Length: 592
Image (cartoon, rainbow, N blue to C red; front, side, top):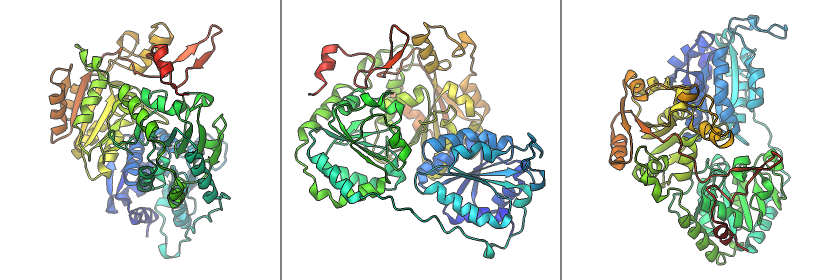
């Protein structure tokens, strides 16, 4: 058997049915074997797009995604997608071609020896859980089994296998390949039974508890058990952007999505809590308001995270730091649930609901916009029209991400993918492709900025070629609106490289869509917007819809920094979002 044939036979045996790839000479044997393997191969037009699509495939299926790239620029183009998967803990296997073993650098001190050669493993090692070049053909079983094990166990993440051309073509006897036996799990040393008992005692002594649920719960494959637990607890639940689809908007326990670009009511819940139980949430700077000491300042904190470094970075006192998998914690919690006093938090839960209702993200006055579509209005309309089994994929930066995550009202059964850690422009379109393929061609709604679209605009051809049921909404705010607003706020409107007046121009989106053979339309304002958006969603082919957005539309509410007289910058606390509330109203929302 040829080694490259073995690789895809192994991948198929893992239950993976699709590989995202861009063919190249450095991976010619892998490409040939993939074509004969029976696996569905999705030929993207850029390696970054292939990896991002594999990332979305993994997010939907709960398995690992696979991307195939060629040597040199094929590998370097893939790095952005790999970095995003690394930060957001997505298991992706990257297979790359490499020059023949005799042409490799091998410590010669040269910058390059083989044609298009790059030492890709040295480049990607810091952003992968495992990265290796296969120099001995008989090691392929061990290495690929180890890579998949590493990608999918512990805190998941990407892995990379680099295979030289002559190794790809080598003949192997698959019956005599050395297997990878797995790594012996080291005892955590945690008395999880005792830690959960302490958690329950702290919970029973609290008056205003809240759970902050992160994507680590889904990665641990205990989302159903988590939902069972919170129904029993009957306390408010906050979610991160990555866990946005855990609870529907109307769930009686859902208290919102807090953060520096979050929901005002959710931030009041967080900042007034007296016990915070964070499960599988990374608690990055944007989530905590760039200041850990101001984060849930009234609350005793119980932090459950599989990664000890994520706990160690939190620069404030943590009463119970618990470094374990969310599954271990939640299952033990369920075992001890009989110890919980359930009846004491009804008034707190009612107050949280009041905050959610008192401070909606989409304000009535947003509908008064006459000359443009207000993005908040669009997201509100889209939320109402999308169905329970739909998939939503916003871009990962700018208003297409921020406003969607603030304003979207989730329905039960919907899935929402994003890549907020890296926040790379260009994520939305290839991720939509990956999600659509992974879901068996469900309807996927994609929301992309006109600037971000340019980063992987070539994937419109992939959408057209595969006739994928994507409904692609492009927010045309005449360039990079988030950069424009930042420059407007911090540099007195001295614009650089953000719109046509400052050195940036973008093409006509509808003409581009037409060139790719895609249906397209525009929505200019709020007139009949519900009917127009519904018409796009109901189209039976892929379609691009451009929305004309006011370039000066701010993301609100949001945390802004205060510049002191000495030039230092201090972040406001999370309860004090811009636009600022009347000081008496703010004070009235702070509980004793």
